[in-house]
Length: 121
Image 1 (cartoon, rainbow, N blue to C red):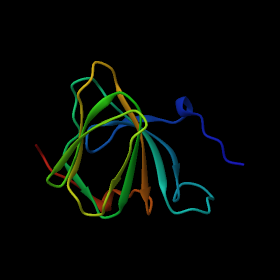
Image 2 (image 1 turned 60 degrees about the vertical axis):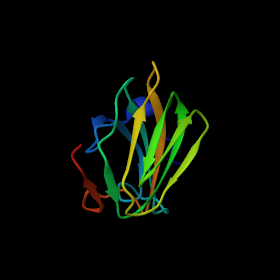
Image 3 (image 1 turned 45 degrees about the vertical axis):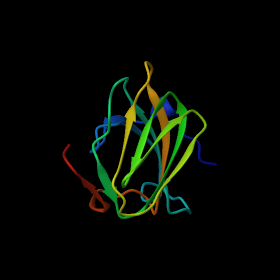
Image 4 (image 1 turned 135 degrees about the vertical axis):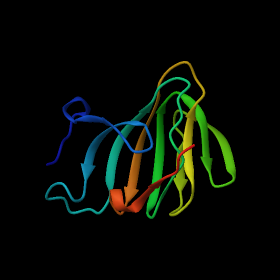
């Protein structure tokens, strides 16, 4: 059985400037899956840096509200929204609320620094 408690996972600032805690990663344990799962937070008024992944990503919004940008499209999002980000698409998310925007990120195959390109805004 594999169980991870959020507060037991190290918090860090990701390349796109979200506050992350990596819960599960296929390359960091004896897991029999290929994805990674992270908990992310963007402070009120904050925005992640535009970036592209070579891999597929899914965001699942837990709390807050914002605007998700994928390629040329932008949509309002909030709690209980699932967002699919195709590989190699420019993406970033803005927190448009007065509270933290909190979401899960699932990357498949698992996130790898070499698969991500950060673009400066």
